[in-house]
Length: 335
Image (cartoon, rainbow, N blue to C red; front, side):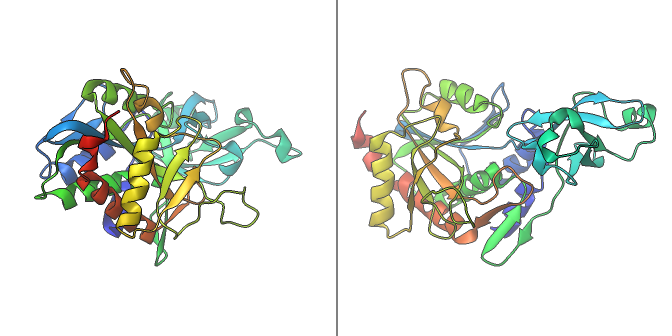
């Protein structure tokens, strides 16, 4: 899956501007679903038709980034965040706009990094003045980290693993299920604007009215030096979420996921994320409520230019989701 991970992570697609990554994903899924469409908000939906209950599988296409708030007379760009960008991690990082313009972030003089705020940061695209900068970019334009995918052997580094790795898993899952008999209808949803409030999943869930849902996303880990204590590590299998800030996963969905992993001898971990959320946070509140779960891929350095995942967790994640989709228990589980 390395080529697909590289293609997805290196494609431009900040929240609200997911057109490029949606086109890339569409080309991958169009021949493996019974119906493929884009809804009014921009979510890409690929449906494997079948009987009730419908199971919604969601992974978000968007990535974090920056937005131009002001262009000064010397051609420097003042910026703000799109999604959960931590400003002190931006110094010296390169960013790219949709038209290919590239710049680097730096800051005004400060006596201490404690004084560093968004108002002190600027993006330098090499313009000599405001007119030259305005010929390349405009107020409101968005930029994303400009970093390439790196294969470290068993592990991979890239920007936008959150959540292009989830998109890769859904694409691979759709391809693996092609030609197999699945008892329930499956809706593979590649959502928009997750990083700014779980927005795309909310509208998609309202339209699709699924009986159950599973979101596929990344999660933080506790296996780095002096990391916050958390019982999730790279290389020990995908994580089955218990709780995060946005959802307490439905016990019937979670238990089915655990049971499926154990039955098929797939390594897994349980996840309790103290801060953060996924598309399941908005899906489970749609209409009269949708029992929802989450499968997470452990990821180091989330919301940085170099997010790291383990290829074995990704492969096991695809296998686990395949077995979950093939499980006959969805029809008999009830609510």
